Length: 194
Image (cartoon, rainbow, N blue to C red; front, side, top):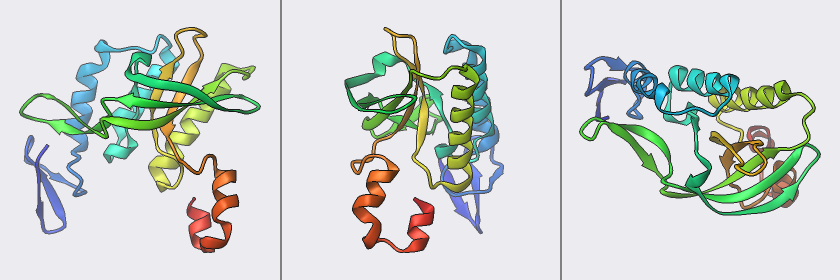
């Protein structure tokens, strides 16, 4: 979507309405494009589908969008960690993440075509609602504050059928490792925003 700047507002080249931001994101138009695609994908779980659809319909910016990502869009998948609730896998996301609507080609433009990501696999949750709650909290935290690790979407391990969150890969590892390495090199304000 091509947006031109105009006195602190942007104009959507698709609907010619004002947008509240300059990042080529028109919420009404993009919500419509997402909604038109709802019948073309499913996670196999109505509750997960609803989390994804709600995020897509309510995203004010591209970084608030998550999507269902088929497992075959990942390559070089390898386990890099294990915790109390599951395992963390490194992977490369083929095709990248949603960035903006391409009016000419009538499809989503994607950035970072070979994006490094982590797959957070939930193995040991007793209650599936805990998995859903973790996903919703992560999504809301990132959308509101942009300080947590970017949440790109949800996938499913084809062998175990466990759902996995697709998150940004950080070379520093998890938050604990990042702070251990960088604690003396960043100020308190930066620590609060990590």
